[in-house]
Length: 208
Image (cartoon, rainbow, N blue to C red; front, side, top):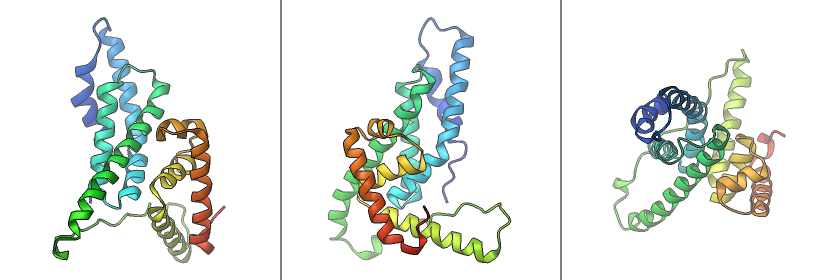
């Protein structure tokens, strides 16, 4: 299983020092470095989860998050700290769309190949329950999480993106539109359709 831990530290070490602007004092550069480090550490696991559900493949998800982090460090290290969140998720969603485009082409050729060449997919691990719940409750929660993740994977790409950013990341409509590079009206449409589809698919598993 791929581990995402430590990814942010790696990108700070590899990428940020090469993009300090002339005229910045050593202290200012260090402070910005540390701020970017904290930001990447705060989003890496959730970003990995989003990419993992989108791709159903842990290795691909890890690569997507790595690339998104690298691009943020490479292109926007000197942006204001409050701008990084929207920029990062916009890059992440762009990388997920790129993955879908590559996979569409790859899958056309895969149909001509032997089934023995199909890639194995790593299962999505559930988050550990630390609330001291009963085994029966834990099992039901585990099944509900699995059902939600399976339902999310069946959504059209743009509906999936809108739901993940709005419901999981807590983005407002404007922030989601920026991350998805689309109009706010499109976000509302994709999100509404995602909710409707999830309600129908999940049935008893749906939790308001």
